Every structure is written in structure tokens, then in C-alpha cells.
Image (cartoon, rainbow, N blue to C red; front, side, top):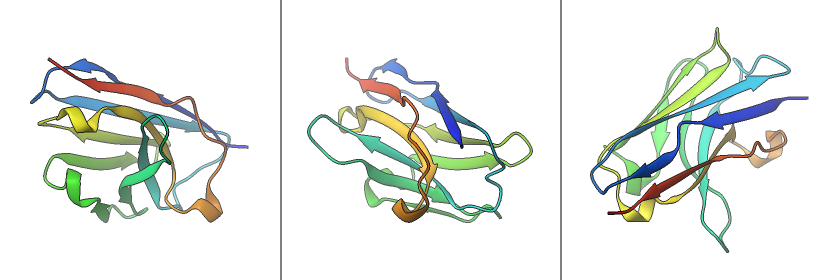
Length: 116
């Protein structure tokens, strides 16, 4: 079974930056599209960025131009570089495959809080 460990979250002021990491163990995920999701209290997780095994990426409109997803297949790790963070980006961030039908068990996530 796959396990995800997300890290890199924290408290930053508006306009700040963070780089999230998601290390996967249990099996290679190099053949999967991978995604970063975020969730706020009372809401469902939403997919904000996804990346193919070859590096093609897609973004949810609200994060386009500010978030960059990348991956290192040799390390079985996915990253999310976030710049110009805004209060509405505050959420718990998770990684997983990009489709619910292929999702593995969720990790604990990493909290991102954007506040002055």
C-alpha cells in the first residue's frame, strides 16, 4: 500500500512563498498522473494542480501563474512551489493520484496558513 508524507507547510504573510513536498513509499508512482489537493474545513478536497509522468501539468484557475507542480520520479516525490500566496490559499494540502478512482489512502497533509 502507498503511504504519502506531505511537508513544507507553515504560516506566511500574503505575498509569501512556500514549497511543499510529498514523499511516497510502498510502490513507484512514476506511471501515474499525480496531483496536489487542498481542503478547508467543511469543504471537499479540491484538485489544484496535476502532473503527468512526463511532466505535463495542469492547474486550477485560481492558482495558475502562482503554483508550479513538479516531480522527481527517482525519489518518488512530488513538489508544489507556491508564490504570491493569498489568504484564500489557506488550507490543508495533500497529494495523491489525480483521479478519485485511483486514489490511495490519504496522508496527514500539511497546513498552509496565509495571514498577516
